[in-house]
Image (cartoon, rainbow, N blue to C red; front, side):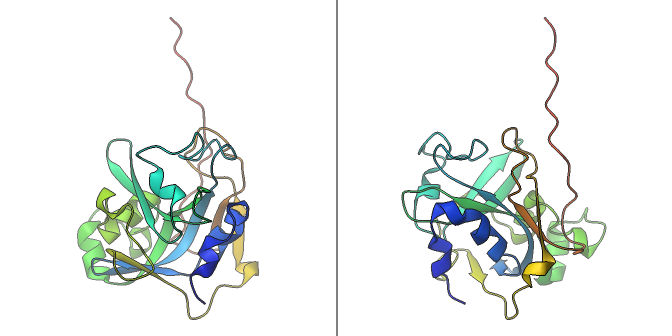
Length: 204
């Protein structure tokens, strides 16, 4: 399987995201098999997307070529990693939410000393990014041509569609019930689902 399908129309981002399950991403001595991902569409179509209101300095890479990386900082503490998908000019990306470390276990353990088990090493988007030792410097680099710090490769045996489940997204304040989170059924590395709960406003 090649990489051309990553550039499928942004309207097909859900299918593209599900198709990334079972793929592997390697960086800095660690290789991870993707077990959970989350899709985000582009301008005016998805209020949970960083590109919803148009291009900015931060999200410009989302409008660029498919196969590039978009890393962003959250809660002032963690990096999260996305693969840009879709046609140039039509923003779409897939958040890499969780995976199984299949190579470089000792290195991943050293980077994630708080992990209770190996299944927890990359269980969650921030943990996955930490295990790969990737940060904002990865933004705009290619994950498909070997020139960047990370390399995305297809599985030798893609998971069966019957093994893929879909449900609401996690950690977004808008469109959180859109079923664009995809994961491999019964895989121990998939993160726990927590439904978005709006914060109560303080009375003056």
